[in-house]
Length: 78
Figure 1 (cartoon, rainbow, N blue to C red):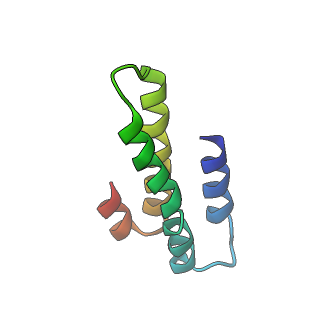
Figure 2: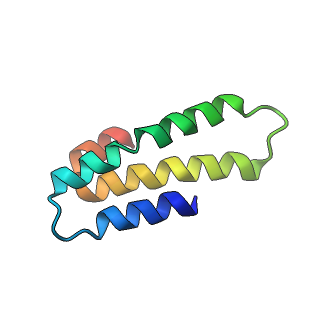
Figure 3: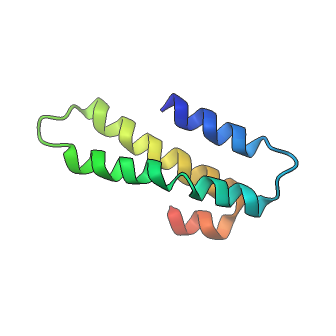
């Protein structure tokens, strides 16, 4: 979770980047979303609530960052 938040903050803090470039960069994080998808499929009845919540929080963090930059695309994700 910490790595995801650091990356999101780094992208959002780039003052010289256009919003379009920021969104493209965050959408490039698709590999992280694929990883989340894979992890979701690996969760089972033996998974702890902590594990499930951590995965959900990673996904939400990425979606919220996109929403901060571009409401239209952000709403589509959320």
